[in-house]
Length: 140
Image (tube, rainbow, N blue to C red; front, side):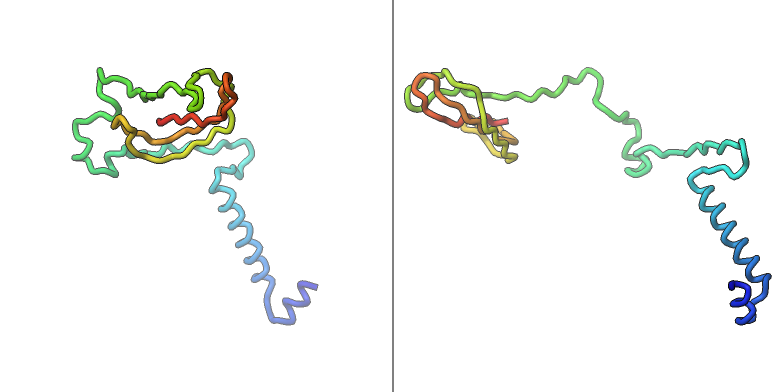
C-alpha cells in the first residue's frame, strides 16, 4: 500500500530511505541527551560542570574579602516569647483545661510593652474553677 502510494506521487525509494534514516538519527540524538548509551556495555561519561560562585551574580567586588555565613564568635539568634499568665476573667483563677481550637494569625505589630511580634496564637480553654470558656492569646 505504501509503495503504491509513493509511486503514484512520483516519490522514489531514496526518499523513503532518507526519511527512515532521518528518524533513526533523530531518535539517537534524543536518546543521547539524557545520557543513554547506544553502544552495548559503554557507560556515559560524567560531565563536570564548572559552577560559579554567588559572587559571579553579585559582582566580584561585592564578595571581595568576605566569607559567606555568620562571623566567628557571633551568638545564635534566639526567639524570645513573653507570655502573660492567663487567668479567668470571671473568677481570676489560673487553673485551666487543655487547650483546643488553636488559631494562628500571621501579622506584625507591637505589644502593649513595646515588644514587636510577628504572629498571634489564640487558644480556647475552660476555667476549672467556674467553667468559664476563655481565649488565651500568645504573641510571637
